[in-house]
Image (cartoon, rainbow, N blue to C red):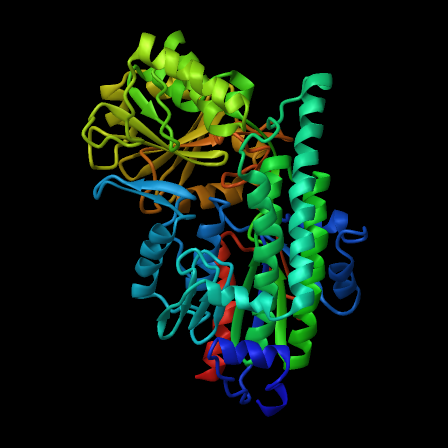
Amino acid sequence: MKKNKFNRLGLLKKNLKLQDLPSGSQRKFLLVQIDGLSYSLLQKLRTTRYLPFTHGLLQNGYHVTKYDPGYPTTTPFIQAGILYNDNSTIPGFRFLDKKTQRSFNCGITSDARYLENELQEKNYGILRGGSSIGTIFCGDASRSILTVAHLYRTESGRKKIRDVIIVILLNPLQTLHVFLATVSEFFVELSESLRDFLRSILYWEHSNSPFFYPYFPFFRAFINAIAREISTQAGVLEMDRNSPYIYVTYGGYDWIAHYRGPESESGFHILKEIDADVRKLYKQAQKKGYDFYIYSDHGQIPSIPFEKLYYESFASFVQRISKLSARGFSGHDTEWNWNKYLYYKLEYYYDNISLPFRALAKGFSQLIKHTILKKKKDPAINWKNTEQIMLLYSSSLAHMYFNHSPEHLDLSDIEQKYPGFVLKLVQHPGVGFVIGTQGKNIEIIHAKGKVILKDKSVSFEGERFLRLYGDEEKLVRQLKYFAQIKYCGDLIINGAYDGKRIVAFESFHFGSHDSVGGKQNEAFFLSKDKINLDGVLNAKELYKIFYAYHQTKK
């Protein structure tokens, strides 16, 4: 401790009131997650200028293997599996509990904390006694920084986030670096918005409108400059004080890939920056004797939003064919008539564009609202309305809940109350397949076929459509596990996939995951030891790799 008293790490520990932990003889690990980078794209980029450090690792004794994280291909499901060996309560990024009338969004602190409390009651987290940085769940970590469930927490309780900023501010060069990176990211986003706008005009390409979300340039600057730098320096600090088990997540590429596409130049730029930060973590890991791992939780594939392809939201389509009130997670009123559709569009643009068009859109929407619709603001989920369909979107995956019953509905229940509804649903070209239950059986329904999963057998009717989405035998096993996850919708919808591109239900996703099809299921695992993960069907099978460190300690 004395030798670090006056250096930067020493000052950090003093300001944050941190003590060095005894190093002892126990094995330690650092696990780095690059969110959304598929195995195929890693292999494609490893010899380019975007991933020079990762390529160097693979040339100098490290090994990379492909594994299948399971269904759904969403970060909270995968992290819960790896951290706790249990993802049986997480069917997507957004979902509902009809019995308790609670909605979940894994990007919201209170929801992530509630779900983690469920996991902690019966499972042992692999970060117990260690540190979680930038994750959704904490994995029983003693110290958590920039995690969703606990923004900043230590064993003595929650702390103020200003303490995290000290990680940067105590180093003037890092402060300057973050400032320049923030400005760079902001202007890169502005230039790419304008470029996409011009391409949409010249080539009639679907794209996100310029400044579609007014906050997005600022969000991009935060996630890819400030948060990334904090995560890197926090990881270096935690290794310096001998925290035995450390998990660092870099989420910047995944966010940009959703917005711009998984193989956009913008996304590659972020990967280059992440690769440079991973190098810093590796150098400290080597110095402090940590086993070093890099992995991705899933991949991404090109997508197009349902709304841009079919000129109506998925909720409005569901409302038309069901004749019921339908709500997407964003809460837009989508009762289908032209006046309300026009209002919906204007309100939508008002929510998602910048001045001066924002004021103009607001003026038109208010005119329609007061003179034609007399529309009152409704909550996104009206639990008192027992004739309502609720749709919770996770990119190209959607959970559908019928509000007239607090119980999970079988397909026969839905058909009896709403004849022909499921058939109309699967016949839409934007819908790939629908999952429902019938007693103890699980049915996967496509416009041209059906798969029926029984306890010990599988039967196929019509076209073998699952083969387009991946390995049929693996998918059958994954779908069986998925359909039995707590909180699943009465119906589960997978976007249509043509072998290259999938339909997403979120309005700005030009890169997608959460469902199945293509590279979504192509995650990678990089380690010093050669580990065979060919048979993995669920990310929770990786739990044993890191739980072994605790068994050695015991």
